[in-house]
Amino acid sequence: MHAARVTEHLALEEDMTRIESIFVRHRNALWIRASFTGLFTDYYIHLMEQKIRHNPELDMMLKEHIAMLSLYLVTRPWAETTGWTVNLRAPRVNLFATGGCTQESITGRLFTEDVREPDRNYFYSQTTDPYQKEPRLSTMEMESRNPLLWFEQFYHQSEQRPGRAFHMGDDDYAVVVAQPDCDLDWLASLDVEAVKQLEQTEEVKLLEVRKLRFFCGCDLMKIMPLLASWRNRLDDLFGEQEVIQVQCPRCAAVYPVSREMVLAFQAND
Image (cartoon, rainbow, N blue to C red):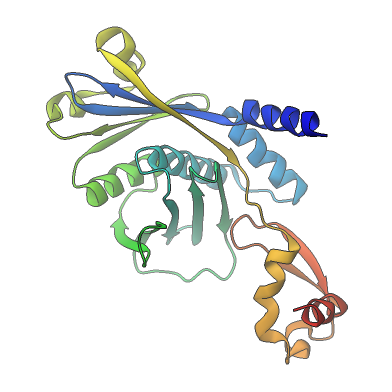
């Protein structure tokens, strides 16, 4: 049994997306890169299982939003968990992603129904740290609809130094972010081809590798407590239905819940 668990763990490790953090010597910059093919595959398997279909533009936007948060997490301490929500005016949609390196997972979803229409496009970030009592909150207004530019704007605001984001082709993405005494002219001059050649043109050192997978971890027993406030108002919750569909707010997975299930959960509460 132990050997089976070890094999399963190794298979899971092999399927995870490796994100490399590389120090660019003499330029004083961090280069974070990853190929997200495996993570995006898990994302599409999740959509297929939940019978979710996004239009291509929003699908690409969400994938890049998730990729940018993944790379951002690797610029930050391991223990942090960060959620990013983007509220767009047109189309009226919310993009959500959340993840953490300690959990080695990231998830996300689109909200396209009952979305409040803002007067401007907004980006919201919330970071929790076990060593801090309160989450760290940040908000910014955006002009762009490009998740890579969202990253650049947010990184500059949150870290007080610049960062650049690049789509390297296919499912490959990278960011290069300034460290103290960074060569800012060099950083500003980078383009995709220059980033592809960094190992040939610069002295670099691999600092660490972190791993992430697309995974929420939700299940019915984690969602049922959210219904506790309805325990005395089941008719308001169910109406004339015997079964309702409850959706995970993090990944949009749907769970059927019956009146009997709520009552049984209450009995064991």
